Each structure stands twice: as structure tokens, then as C-alpha cells.
Length: 214
Image (cartoon, rainbow, N blue to C red; front, side, top):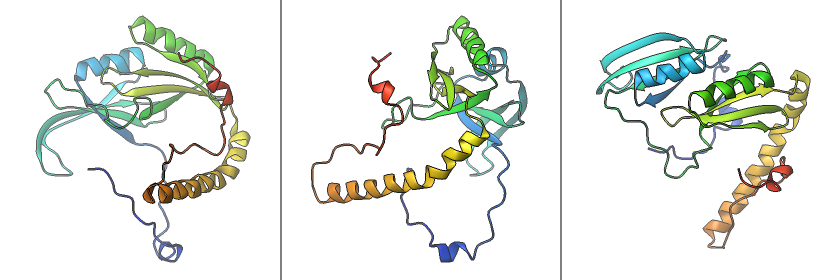
């Protein structure tokens, strides 16, 4: 079930709550896997993430429902994990019907652009189609799909901490401007006016529009 939009808590209510706990890092992100061994080969043999932990059960601890599974985890260098569920029926998760395939993805960071090129060569040698190296100005990336249809990105950071700090100083103002324009778009749509899809107030990648589609 899709989450419904709700009104945020007012600042007065937030001030009465306990402060947010420090979120240290990603622990794991989980996807459905078509086949555990196929997935292990890709993440361990090709991407180099060691298989580190397995949980198996007939019942789901969070919901109590009966659904036998093997839940297996691959470890990243910082101690976080990407994890998968093999439900034993050779079915992968279906793509979202209303979302372009490039939107939902997870990105892993590597140290250098040379590392990106090396990983691209490994993936292509294993028969994986790779897009990039793509220049995002503050980082460069390659894109590809795992055997389960999960879109992955490998990223090499270009901007240093000072540059990212400068970026952070305008992030709230830019998002607030987008939110205000989106609210106006909603009102016009509700009033029955013909509205085009909402475009951002500025284009950070003008060079992309002048390039032919890959």
C-alpha cells in the first residue's frame, strides 16, 4: 500500500519529543532475489562484497506471517550491508508500474574514477551492460542492473568536504522553492487547469539536454 501524504508535526510538537538518535550509517538495504546463488555470484565474485550472514525461517518476525525465506547479507567496507530475500520460488520482484527504471536504485562509493573503470571492465566481462562513466560534477558514476533487476550505481566522489558543505548551505532554500511551486501546481491541477509536469526552477545539468540519448 502506498504511503499517504500527511501534514508534518508543527515545530511546537517536535520540541516536546526526545531528540533524534544519532543515525550512524546504513545497516542494510534489502531486496528480493530470484536465486540466492545467482545473486551471490554477482555480489561476491564480481563486485567483491563478501557473503557475511544468513537468516532462515518459515515465519516473518516483524509480521508473523508464514513465508519461508533465506535472508542473506553482503558486507561493504564500512560494515554496512546489502541484503536479499530468496523466497524459494525463482521469482524476482516486479518493477514499479508507475516509476521509470532509472529512479529506484542504490549507489555504492568507490575510491577513484580508475576504480570505476576497473569495475566496469569486470561487469562487462561477466556479461553485464554498463552505462557510464557519467559525470555528475560532484561525482562520477557507472550504472547497471543486478540479476534481480535492481539498478545499482558505483560512484567516485570528486567534490571534497568543503565543496559539499557549500552545497549543503543552499539545499533547504532550493527544496523550499520546489515545494512552493509544487503546491501551486497542485492547486492549478485541482482547479481543473491544464498543467504540464512540474519542472525544477533551475537546470544543474544543461549539457545533458544537448547530448543525444545513449
